[in-house]
Image 1: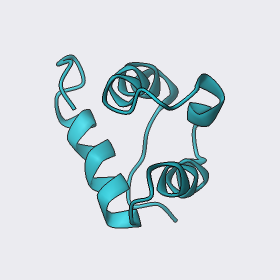
Image 2: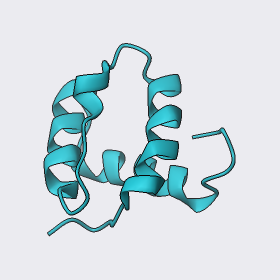
Image 3: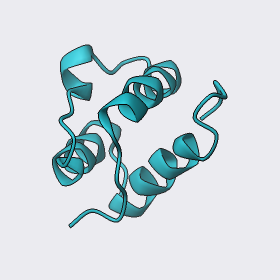
Length: 71
């Protein structure tokens, strides 16, 4: 089970931040359904060539202040 929970409305905002930071990611790379955090984390690990802890840290950081545009 993932160490993070992301709702669909939160993901829509967070996805913008992720796309801004990692502009090589495509829309299909960032597809997500609520409850499928593990799938998203694994996909981002592969695409970003980073470990699980880094991906989770980055996503949590983006969720802290969801209205802020910074990641």
